[in-house]
Length: 194
Ligand code: FE
Image (tube, rainbow, N blue to C red; front, side, top):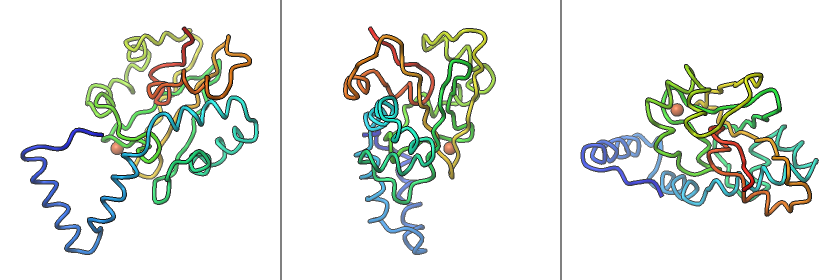
């Protein structure tokens, strides 16, 4: 659950909802339904998608072609959600997702974005100095790996398909899902085996 808004921001939010309601643009029921979908969403679903893509070539093909369909196949409720694009990391290219404008994030799939994702520091520094930001997360990439920073927008949300770590040969999809963290789905971290 996200922290509830408080004080002035709550009053503003209530006024906004009342205004949208009065104009017939969105009902309180629709807002409650959307909130319930985000409450049910979780990085664990994204982790299971990654693990299945690592172990099931047909699912990998679906994931790269249609992220929303791949998310729904794993139980996420994506109706009405923006498009979901999947960025595949390779030995030569690493992806980092940011919303430079505000806090666009694949909420229907991964739930609420973490506080740092919404911070001005992350939104600006991810673009200017992505390698330094990654290093602060303990993510050291070889110099010859290109870091591609991708902007999430109102229409298009992104998740990263990390590389499967060496040493996980023969692991079940369930065990693999256990090493895929939310931060790896955003691209600030990579899956680690301990
Ligand atoms: Fe945004």
